Length: 86
Image 1: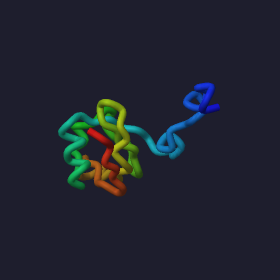
Image 2: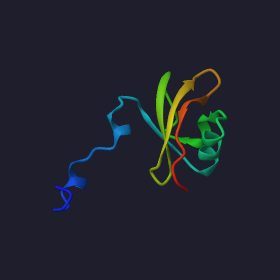
Image 3: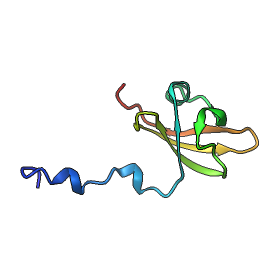
């Protein structure tokens, strides 16, 4: 498959297999994520609307990690952070 170029069409990104909602953030959210700092909901789209784990992505689609929503504090807290290439 690799030789024929079909492999890429059959692979699924591992982060898409987890059943958690997805949020996206810009450079400020990504910076907070890399440093393990809480991320205010205002920096995210869509704004998290439920408790539990969320998948966080940078604007360019890079997966940043898994984050727990703090509904009273209106922010995401880092659970597992990945450092994608810049």
